Image (cartoon, rainbow, N blue to C red; front, side):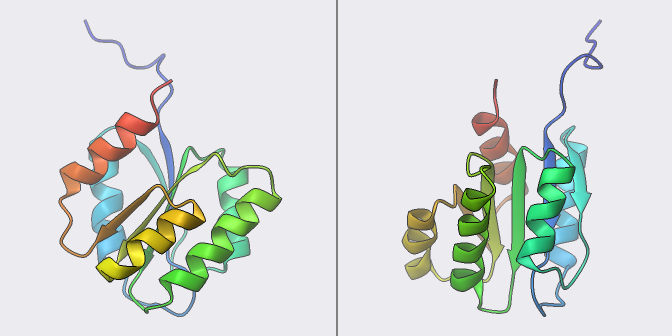
Length: 136
């Protein structure tokens, strides 16, 4: 018998920052992560970076995922990573998804973003990425 009740489930905050109102991708990813056994907290639309960091702290999240289609991924990614560092939780696994040009992936990585999943990324790839990097 496989008893997973004693195992700590991976806690993921999925967030939609700023004025970006396109949340279908975030909801699809959230559903896939839930199906993979993770606990997902979806913040809803139009959240500030401050709200996202506060939620990650309150929920003791292992992972923070931001879905961005507005083109503001660089300033939002930088602001998130700076605030996580300021709060002493820069070890959180941070993922950014959405309309992310290939040329911006290195910059996001330099900020400390662990993974970038552009539109069209396979859900299995995202799940595998998280599971491999949150093993205890």
